[in-house]
Length: 352
Image (cartoon, rainbow, N blue to C red):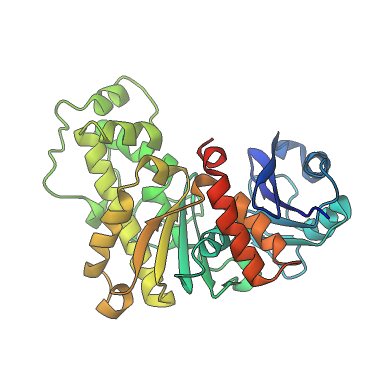
């Protein structure tokens, strides 16, 4: 009998789903727009429609779901998440189990991404710290197959570690978070602030040895002409040696290294994985962070730790959801084998 393992990633902009079969082959990949402003019922209706498509090959064996924000042990969303009106208090796990007619598990989305990356390295990593760089900065930690969730699955919010006290304002309401310096939107905003000569709130994160006039910078010229920059554009310019892009990259490196050092001191991972959309345009951040952390944390914390790029790329959360769901009905050995087979077969899908 065929077995189908579904993974769903819930975001404020889109609802994404995949189905893996027992060989690790990606059988279905689907997406829906999130009707976030229409409220909880509209979002649940869209999720139900997504589940119908994911079930089109046959009954699902399991469903794993990643959701932003807090998730309690009863699989209820707690607190605000993803700008979805009325999302707090949604008994999402129960609703999805009823929709799919299959065992269902709900976790924070960054924790799901961490699980995917650990599953792909189970033979070589016993303690993995995941740092996801996208619209925000999320984090997750897996030790021997167990996700460290903490209270309401909020553990390892590494993007909200303060790297520059009193620095740039963060969306969380605190100043100086790593997310305010190294998330995708923040990288673009810092580039614009610097180009326009505004105070970028860098403080001790300001790099040395780069001329603040950014002479010859095409990126700076675009910002001065009114362009709103993003991380993709900054790192495209970085590959061309643009001075402003190099400056902003140095800021992001310093912020991420401080956050990673805190993770090393607290969790003692043997592997740090950088994932998300930003890292795909800036793969050098892995080696850069590896080089910076020895200056920021005691030797025993970093000497046995390697920094790597996510193997599941920006889809780590989706694959992690499918794999973590599969763990409800399969052994640990089967799940890690499934992860290896999925990686081997899905390189083209991961690049999309």
